[in-house]
Length: 59
Ligand SMILES: [Zn+2]
Image (tube, rainbow, N blue to C red; front, side, top):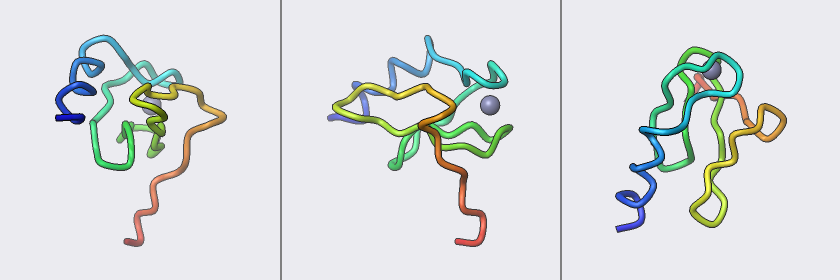
């Protein structure tokens, strides 16, 4: 399953902004501290602050 493949990244990656833990969600890797979503493209997490999208808390 694709999500299991991505799960291994959890151990090795951190938020480039705060170096905090990331949470794997369907939309990408989420930093709850920065409230940013880092997208996953071709099974590779894009850990760039410029590519991150803010979490929409209204939904
Ligand atoms: Zn962060």
